[in-house]
Length: 339
Image 1 (cartoon, rainbow, N blue to C red):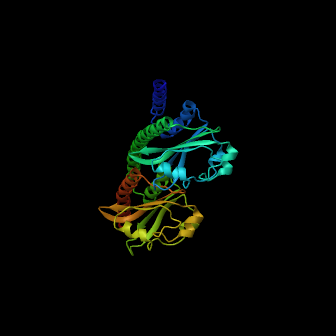
Image 2 (image 1 turned 135 degrees about the horizontal axis):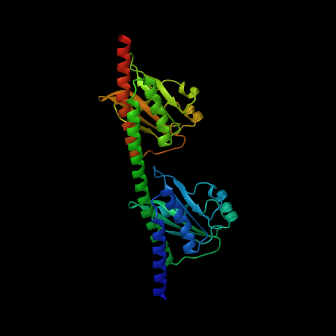
Image 3 (image 1 turned 120 degrees about the vertical axis):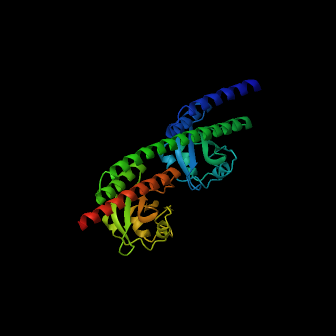
């Protein structure tokens, strides 16, 4: 009997692993996991949640077999079973409608959920998310079944990481191509406004941003002056100067600066304006020419976003290329005026 059970588990393990490693598209991997698990393990639903870049908040990445109303019930980060799973301990909830550890008992009851198995998803040796299997009937799990699903959780982590690496490589390749295109376009003109507008309009589309701005340092007084903007209201753009913001100090030293939430970060001063405009995260990078800072490029998002290393590198590369083209255009215009 044990041999038959082990053979069944092995067959299931191979089938799930084969399914979820068959794609390097991250979104397809998420969907495959949540669709394949219920099919093979005879459960009604499955969800995957991963920690965001801050490592503090779980974000729903995929779900199967559950209503949108249930999925929108609220965060589950503080539920004890979730907390323990994030510590590496699989948890079985026999009756979710009666268990005090469940944060939304009414929503759970309305959805018809009875039993829940929560297992950790390790990625790069750290618990980075949870896999939840849900049934609409009472179900118990023996230790062999828990160990089996936990092992599948580890395979999920491997599949997710492989897809994530592929996704990052694709992003880097796309960024490389865009840098080449932008460089050709901005170096084909001596019109400063055209150069600036091209940068602030191309980056939001490529990086999925809300907006972008460029400010240049005035030669007369060293103050930052807005020269180009995209995706922002005139009211927000006229909120006031940025020279006194703490972040500007670091940028003047040639360092990029990341602001997770402009609505409350101590390094920004226009919190109410950011709230009204719907701005969350800001990545600001210095625009340089021959190691001298001549301006600042700011990239703004509507949602909290933790930029990747590839994002930082891309923004810095564009700012570097832009710095050369901007200074060349400024110098050309000076020569033109002097003739």
